Length: 313
Image (tube, rainbow, N blue to C red; front, top):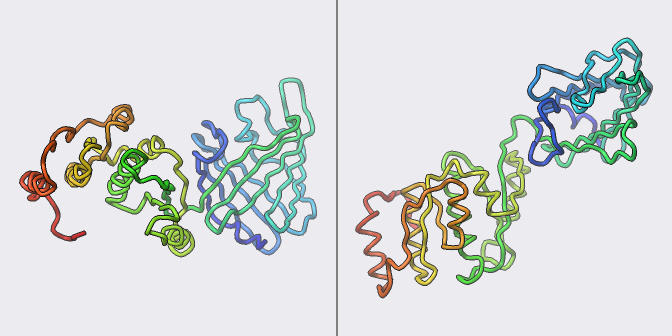
C-alpha cells in the first residue's frame, strides 16, 4: 500500500461508525512525508486536537503526549500522563498502516502502562477506516470509525428489489423514485440501483463511475424508512395513489412533482405520517369507473399549467 494515499483531511461518517459521542474524533488530518506520518484527530464538540507522530521505517519515536485527554476515552476517567514519556511506532502492510502508542495512563486508582493501536485501512481512495484497540480493555475487538475524504461529494444509494407488481413492492419503489426526485432537486444526492432483471442494467456501472471519476462518496440506505428519514426535509407532504387504478400512480407522480411531495399507497401512509408529512392529495376512489383518457384529462385540467415544459418523457 502507498502510505501517501492516507494523507489528507478526513471527515467521520457518523452513521457508519461506532458511537462517537460528544468528544469522539469527528475529523482527522494525516500528513505523510518521506520519513514520518503525522496524525491529528480533532474531537467533536471541543477544541481538542490529539496529535501523534510516528516514523515510517518502524523505529520508535519517543516524546511526551501533547494532549491529556484521549477523545474516545473522555468519559471514562482515563487520561494520558503528560509527565511520562511515550513511545510511538508505525508499521505498514499490504492493506494498511498501524500506529502503536505505548504510554502511561492516569486513572483514579493510579498510573498504568497501556498500548493503543490505531489501524488505518483505506477502503478506496476516498474512504478510510480507523480501528482503535486498547490494552486496557480485555479482549478488545476494536472501536471502528469510518471516514470520507474532505471535499468529496457525499451521497446515498439504495438497491431496489425485483418485485414491481401492484400487489408486491411497486408502491415501495414508487415512493423511493418520487423521493429521489425531490432529494436531487438542487444537487445529486440519492441514487437508485435497479435489479439485474430490470431494463436499466447500467445503474451498477454508473454507481462505480460516480465513485471513481466524479469523487462521490456513497453511504448505503437499506430501508424505505431510512430513506425518508434522510431526505424528509426535501418533501412537503405526500400524495396517495389508488392501487385499484394503476393510472392513478402516473397522476400521483405529476401532483408530487408540482407539490414537492412523495407518492404513497395506503401501505406507506403510516410511515409518511410518522415522518411528519401531511396529505396533499388522496386519489383513492377518485377515478372509479373512468377511462385512462378521462383520468389524464382530469390531471391536465388541474395541473398542466404548473408543469414544466422543459422535458417530455
